[in-house]
Image (cartoon, rainbow, N blue to C red; front, side):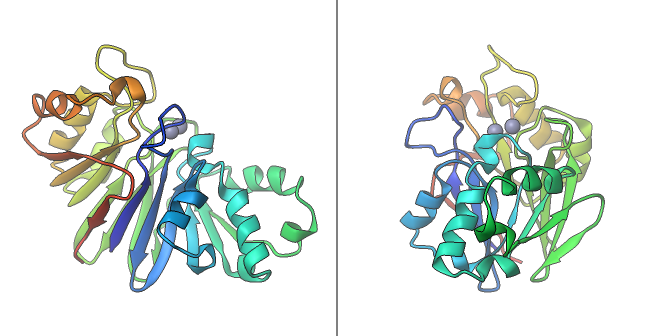
Length: 249
Ligand SMILES: [Zn+2]
Ligand SMILES: [Zn+2]
């Protein structure tokens, strides 16, 4: 499996860091993980055709993670009118209600050709032999973190989260983890990680390699990696847009 970061930033970041989105590629198939503002243009820069995407996984309904979902559906419809009928959108509890509210404002282009919406509860799903499971992380009422297993290799995506013991157990021994690190320790905000909270998760979960994303500008300083490395001896790197992450299955 290969993961490409489309957005390592937040809604306040400058153009170097787009808000959240990731491309997953496995077995010549591709999917999106979150779809924040600007993700369509990030896909353009990779010369990826949105109609080639199989499905989309959403972590939560904050707009920096899902504002481009309907723009994506519209582009798919205009490129190939039947393409949404085979498209699947997975997400947390509340996905159907969220979708129906917005779809109700769109009319026939969408309502006559709907994607399939699938809410995660506790089930494990399979996407081309990748095993995908989720864990509620408490960032919002229903927000979820994702764990993808390719053979015996594990990839964890925290999305937005505060420190909590559930995700430590869930992410334990991941080969690669993409963890948010929104704010500096001097100015922590509830629902998000700081370098010290991130380091604690990495060490307690014994994560083999960590990529840091979802970095707000006030935390996005040249010394961010040093601030993290004084707190953890683990293998940790700062993520960037279009970074490619390979997980050998
Ligand atoms: Zn959020
Ligand atoms: Zn966010």
